Amino acid sequence: SLFFYAWWRPLNVLIIAPSVALNYCIARLMQRFIRESRPRRVRALLIAGIAFNVAFLGYFKYAGFFTGVVDDVFGTHFVLEKIILPLGISFITFQKIAFLVDVAAGRVQRFTLRDYCLFVLFFPQLIAGPIVHYREVMPQFERAPCVYEGTNVALGSTLFFAGLFKKAVLADGIAPMVTALYGHAIAGESISFVYAWCAAIGFTLQIYFDFSGYSDMAIGIARLFGVKLPPNFNSPLRARNIIDFWLRWHLT
Image 1 (tube, one colour):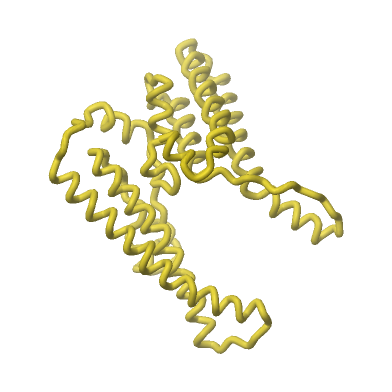
Image 2 (cartoon, rainbow, N blue to C red):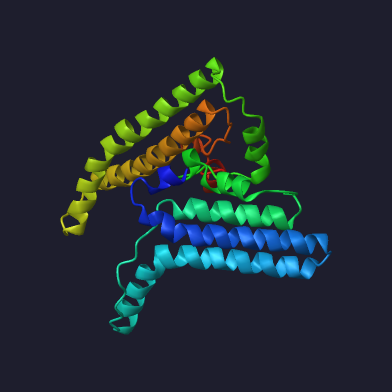
């Protein structure tokens, strides 16, 4: 998993590794305080861990945005060096938070460093989810047969290529048209009512096929190893209202 994560940019590992190690230490401390029946310390550690993870994610993803907003609103000129955004930082962070919550709630009784790293850095869903709980996948890792199973290969391959089609053909095929329409609007050109709706609907479809495609590919690759990841989308564009939409979109 580390090799997979470092393939695009090895610096990613150096950035994300301290965060993974700190979360492991926090989880270990919480287990110790649970055994000692110190719920207040467990709660304090959980809050501190969540706060650290949110701050860690916020710095890398939104520091530049907020600096720009402050400059625009107050006329300041803060200088922020270019921040290297670690690959998949959102999903890794959410996975670590889910793990801390499960440990604090007593749903994770025991784990080793190897188990923890496998859970957080399992490569099929490392970059774009689905986000899973420790109790959902670790029993599957423990009983994985590590032999060829035709059913898993057939299902996994089907899901993977369906997701690849969504991403490479549908999402990437729609993207140039949507980009061109938004480009005209940015340039100040007049956009007709029909083209405006085409841009809005096209961008919605592009995002859906992109994200859903990645999720299907991740679920398919995991299934090749005999691991069943939960579905991440349930036909959200068939929803009847906005609440139903968000109940179907990015389920994990």
